[in-house]
Length: 520
Image 1 (cartoon, rainbow, N blue to C red):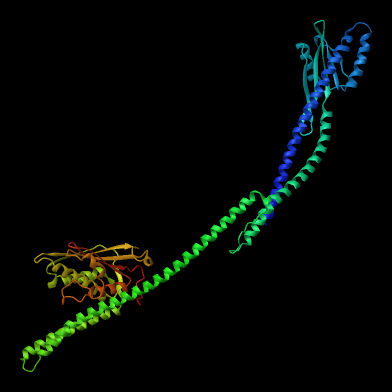
Image 2 (cartoon, rainbow, N blue to C red):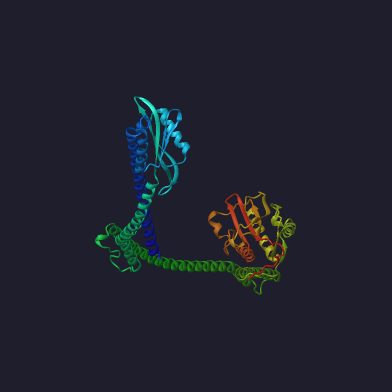
């Protein structure tokens, strides 16, 4: 369809261009012919005027009988010459003779004749209008001249020659020229279009067909004939382009295959890394469990060895109490391990975080481990109600406060520490899935010794602790982290050695009536 459309457009444009060109040539030719015919008519009129002045008009002023003969002969001559009208004016604008036919406008003819009489100079003018061969043209030719004798102007005369005969002749010729133009346009357009199709469109059509039938195993695709001239260059360029594309395609295939191999190897390496990390985690977990449980078991074993019959009753009771405490310690460790592997969610309800913090502050102020800590709160969040198990959230906050108090206590003896709890709101700053939600950020800032940079990435790992043996299991932060994540929150830590630590708990705020949250 597109090829046929291109052929039709080319044919139409060639035909129109030829027609416009030939019509323009015809127009110039006809205008030139009209100009030459009018010039010939002017020359004819000037000759008539000269002959009249030399042979007839002087005799009109003779006093003998020759005046009547001259006047009769003048009329015959004017008719033979095709003069449409003749006007002769004597002195004082007296009309001596008025021609063979009455022509209009008479007043304009009189004015032109008087001008010739007054100036003593001849003139050529045009009067009236009529339709020529293309548009409106002048209708009559007026030639005026003075009649002189012995250096004096006796009279002035004008003749009027019609121009309609010229236009009629041109119109007749124009009809023939139009037939010639149409025939020439048709013939030349046919020849031009045929040659153009033969030289360019057919080779282009072959190139397009070869492109449609192209296969990767083809050799030379765009083959043209020698007579296709410039198209041969185009064919060579297209063949070169296809060869380059084939080469690049092979490179691309090789690159894709290499990437697929690298991706498979990367996945394999990733799987091995994950397996190694799991094994390392299991190893660390096993070592931690063995260490944490081994100590109290060894102590219990020692106390049981001491429980021999020869011991006094009061020492036996003391050893039994100590053994019971160590067994309770083992139970606590096992309970915390269960919290990590299978957190308990309890009953979910709407909790006011500020009320929970206020209640904890009242209890903690009188605790001995907080005696060396200046505890303060700045609860500025406007939205602070969340859906959570209040006991679990209390456990999270208590773990963070105890860790901060222990960190402050590890500073120099006699120094007083500071713990500040603040709350604030923000929108859409955490997980992309929760974008647009309102969040409550609870920050616990202490001025303790801080956490070394190499330990920051491990603070939430099970059994990781920087406390002295026997003073911590390393499960508090891990359990807290699991509790916060179970309600859709996040825990973050920021610390600089010697400048303190900031633990931030971010929780999604309950909005509107959406006070239920399903936790798997």
